[in-house]
Length: 182
Image 1: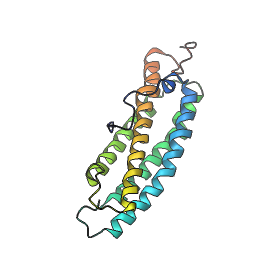
Image 2: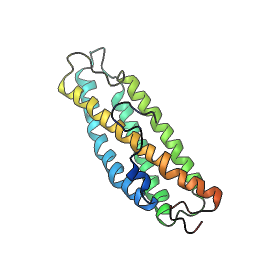
Image 3: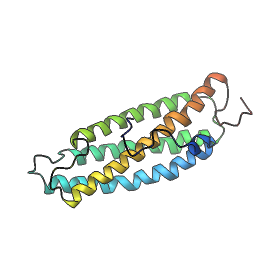
Image 4: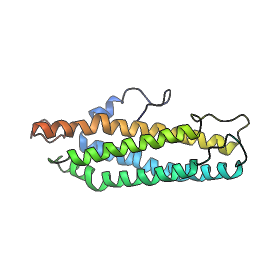
């Protein structure tokens, strides 16, 4: 995903990099999966409201609610695949054969990045029109927070967690950072 300047650290915090893979999967579920499931319904409701109330405004992000709805469905399906397939496999020693599920997760991340680009386009880069109401302002603030958390979430997976198992697949190791059974 593209880093949205200003809010998300350019470097992944070292404490995430240092976590053992099973602990990192639990952290991702608790920190990000729960957060995204909490964020998106409110964002969707605000997007619907802004589109409905300001339908005549030339700056209204027409189609945003539908884009958020689609993104929420895609993200939920992605997180369920992680929770039911990939993360349990990692917690059980990172067995061989994770390269295909990881490739699917990376492709999902690319799809989510395209949805984020669509949101940025619909909202003119999350730029509020002059005199925007509190709902519109709140919508863009919540979208910005969501996008930042999703960016960090996917970067931790793409740049920290997944490479451990992609490297392990080539070396016969487990990918769990244990250094012991490869």
